[in-house]
Amino acid sequence: MSYLVLARKYRPRSFTEMVGQEHVVQALSNALTRQRLHHAYLFTGTRGVGKTTVSRILAKSLNCVGPDGTGGITAEPCGVCNACRDIDSGRYVDYVELDAASNRGVDEISQLLDQAVYKPVVGRFKVYMIDEVHMLTMTAFNAMLKTLEEPPEYLKFVLATTDPQKVPVTVLSRCLQFNLRPMAPQTVQEHLEQVLQAESVPAEVGALRLLSRAARGSMRDALSLADQAIAFGGGTLDEAGVRQMLGAVDRGHVVRIVEALAASDGAALVRTVDELRGLGLSAAGTLEELATLAQQMALVQAVPDAADPTDPDTPTVRALAPLLAPDETQVLYSIALHGRAELALAPDEYSGLMMVLLRLLAFRPQGAAVTAAPVVAPAVAPSPRPIAPPPPPAALPRPAVSSRELLRPAAASARLAVVPPAPVPAPPPAPAAAPAAAAAAKPVTLAPWEEGPPADWDEIPLEGDPAPLPIRAVAPTSAAMAAVAVATDTLDDPLVTRWTALFTDLTAQGNLNGLVRELAWQAQCLALDEQATPKRVVLRVERESLRQQGHRDRLQAALSELLGDAVTLEVVAGTVSDSAARRDGARRVQAQNDAEAVITGDPMVVELLARYPAARIVPGSIRPVA
Image 1 (tube, rainbow, N blue to C red):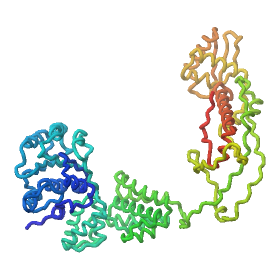
Image 2 (cartoon, helix red, strand yellow):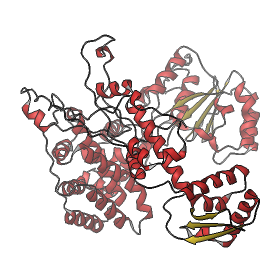
Image 3 (spheres, rainbow, N blue to C red):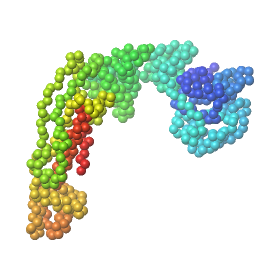
Image 4 (cartoon, rainbow, N blue to C red):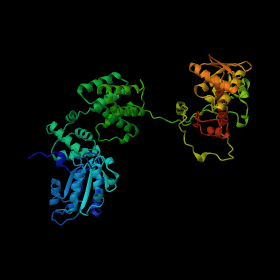
C-alpha cells in the first residue's frame, strides 16, 4: 500500500475539522442551515490555508443525502454516502475542479459553460470549482460573466485565488468573498501535536515550534515539513534535528549578539559572525531571529506580564530585556528588520550580516550604562528665568519713511537698539516635599514643531480675575540680530542712491532682464558724471560672470536709451560694500524686525506665552505685510 502524505491524509472532511478559519466556517454553516445559498463563492488566501478543502466540504454539504439516503442540504455532511465519498476521492461527476493556471483561455471556459445547461447527473447541485481563477484571461472572464451572474438554480460556482487583486471587479461583484487568513503559529503547533500523536511519532515541543514558525501560516506547508522532519529524524522529531534540517539559527547565537551589543563588544560580534559562517547558517535567518528576539524584548520592557509563560525562551528574554534601553531595543528591531533587504546587495551575505551588526554597534552609545530605575517626573518643574518683555505695540510706530531716511546710520541704530533685560527677583525655592525629584529635574526644551502639554481650559481665568499672570518675553530672533548687523554698515553713498534710482527706472521700462539685471542690481557705483559728453558711469562688481563684455554692452545701451544720450560704462572688479541689492536686503531685514517686534509685543501673545510655558513662536513664521 502506497504511503499517503500527511497533508492529504489529514485533510479536513467537515467544517468541524477545519482549523484556524472559524469566521468562514461560521458564515457557511449558518447559510447552509438557513438555506440562504448564494450562487457564487470566492475564497481568497495564501497557499495551504484551506481554499480547496472548504470548496469540497461545501460541495458535500450541498449534495449529501445522509447514511439512509433521505438527507438534505446540511452543514454537517455525513461522509459515508456516495456523494461524500466520491467528492473526497475526486470522482464525483457533478463536482468539477478546473485549474485555471493550465486552462486559462476562453475555449476551456466556454467548454465548461456549455455543460452548465445540463442538470446534475446524480447529485442535487452541480458545483464548478475554478482554482487560481486570477490566471484566466480577460476574454475568459468576460465569457463567464453572464452565466456567473444568472446561473441555473442547480449550478454553484466556487472560485479560489491567491491574488484577488487580479480578479476583475465585475467578477468580484457577483460573488460572496471569504478571505481565509494565515494561521497563527500556536494554531499550527497545536494541530501538528494532534497529527503526530495520531501517527504515534514522538516530537519535542521545540521541534514543533520551529516547524510552525517555518510554515508561515500555511497548514499544508507545516504538514509537509513534518513529513520531511520525520524522514530526516528517522521517525522522531527532536529540536536539534529539525533546526539542522531547516537551517534555522539557534537562539543562543542571537542571545550572544544582544549581549555583545549591550557590552559594546565588537570582538564578540565578529566571533559570532565567524561561528555562523563556519556552521553555514543563513544570514537572513540570523537577522530574522534577531528581530524576533528584539520584538519579544520590547514586549517585556513595555508590558512585562504579556510574555508567554509557556514559552521556554521567556526566561531568556526577561534576562536580556534590562540590558538595553527601550529606545535601543526599537533601533535593534528596526535595523535587523531592514538589514535583511540589504543582504542581496552585499558582496556576500556574511559581509552584509557583519555590516548590519556593526551598524547596531555604531548606534549603541559606547559605555552607556543601562539602569532599571524608573523615570520619576518632577513634582514641580523649575520655571525658566524670566526675560524682560518687549515694549508694547504702542511704542513701535511704523511711520511711512523714505528708503533714504530708513537707511541712515543714526536712524537705523536708534530703531534697532537692544534694551538689556531688567533684573528680576529670583524665583522662590521649590517645595521640600520632593527634593530629590526637583534636583533631578531639568527644564524641558521642546522643538518648535512639538506641542506643549495640553491646556486645561477649565482653569483659564475669565475676564476680571484679580491674579495677573507673569510675563515671559521672547528672546531676540535671528532677523533682529541680522538687522543689528546690517545697521552697522554705511549704506548712504549718494552715488549708490542715484544708481538705485536709475536701476528702478530701467526695471520699470523693462530694459533689464537676466544677467544684465543682476549686473546693475549687485553693482556699486563708483562714478556717475551726467555732465560729461558722453556721460560716464563706473561700476564695481564682484562676480566675474557679471563682468562679461556682452552684459556690459547691453547695460550701456539700456542706459543710453533711458538718459537719451550716449553713455560710457566701465565695469571694474572689486568688493562691493553698497549696492541696490544690499539696500533692498537691509530694507527687508528692517521690515522683518519690525513685524517680529509687533507680534512679540502684542498683549495677547505675551499672555499666551506666559500662561503656557511650553509654547513657542515658530521661527520664520512671522512675515511682514509689505
